Amino acid sequence: MKSQVNLVSALTHYTDSFWNQMGRLFHLITHPTFFTLIFLVLAVILTIVIFLLRKSLILKRLLDQKTVLLEITPPAFTDKTALNTQNFFSVIHGLGKDRNLKNRLLGNKTIFSLEIVSTLNHGIRFLMRSPNEEANVIKKIGFHICLNQK
Image (cartoon, rainbow, N blue to C red; front, side, top):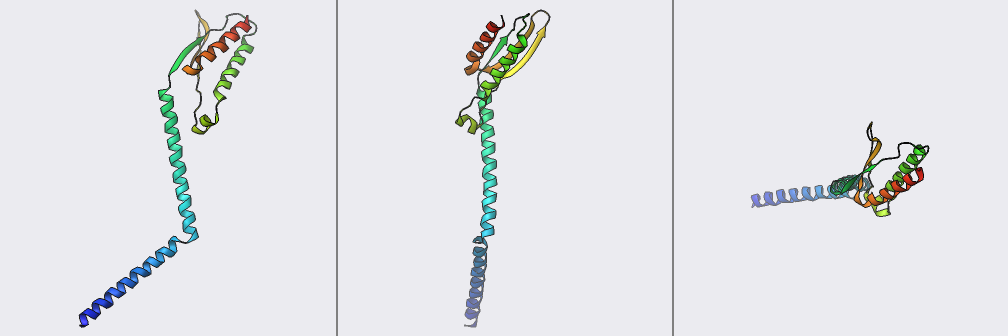
């Protein structure tokens, strides 16, 4: 009989101790500082996940994007070359900035790669890699500028 009382006493002690610890844990969890800390940690983790997801989508879009290489050769002798070249680059820069709200949020940019190539035989040329969607616009801009140079 005494062993049963000791067993009940021990179980009661452990049960009381367990619920006492659970009460302390519940008090800690319901504390406003704890909620603030958990909220900040989750906000930082969510921000990092969104940032990495956005960057990976941008990289995938750039790798899958079809491009075309355009060669633009300005006239060899003209007095308006510098001004027209500046206008050309300004218009190209404007094409890269023209984005709708969806593309701004996703971080999609129109990327152009421009190189200046010069040889004795061919003179100065601009080589431009652009997306297929923008190639026709760039051809029209280049043609318009060449007409204004003459």
